[in-house]
Image (cartoon, rainbow, N blue to C red; front, top):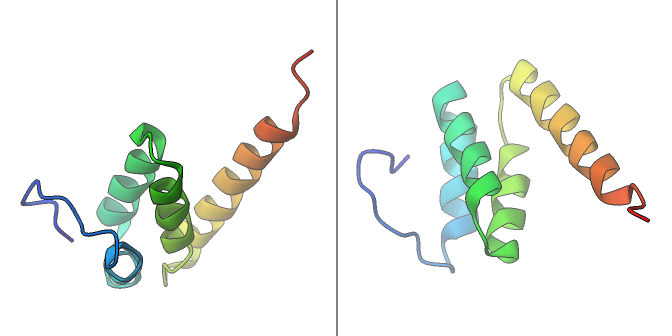
Length: 81
């Protein structure tokens, strides 16, 4: 991916770039994108990154994706009153 250079990704290409990096990358790339989903303040960017994490070809990273996504969903679904 683009971890060597600290450049921004054009919004029009973000989905393709993130998905391709995850598909052909490994744990390092997966962790990079996951960590960025946790720090971004742009909801649409976080959604694109979360979708791209599901493009991994490594089953154990797919399991990690599924468990983290489930955990995030249960946190959002919990009432706070």
